[in-house]
Image (cartoon, rainbow, N blue to C red; front, side, top):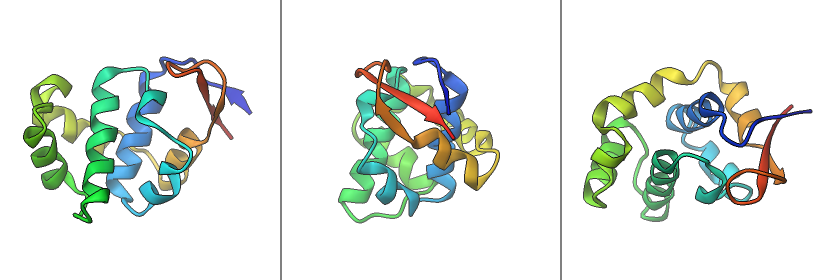
Length: 117
């Protein structure tokens, strides 16, 4: 396994984009991943919004994520609608995002390090 730098923006984008494309994966990843594991504040906010949608049993897609971020006052802070579109476009394959989401204790923002398989 190759450790990722704790501020690997591409890894975070791929992970969030993968969740956006494959929302059922959020349930699997949520047990091992916290918003604080993301280095970038915008990505923490996006992940929290995704978890909020899941907790409310609402579907996760471009529209609902946009609306949830707007509802909690974070849409402009994350970069607006274009950032949500960039997330969706950034996920290269379904298998890769799961690898980006494998987390263990280390040195990300929260003291954990993301690892690629």
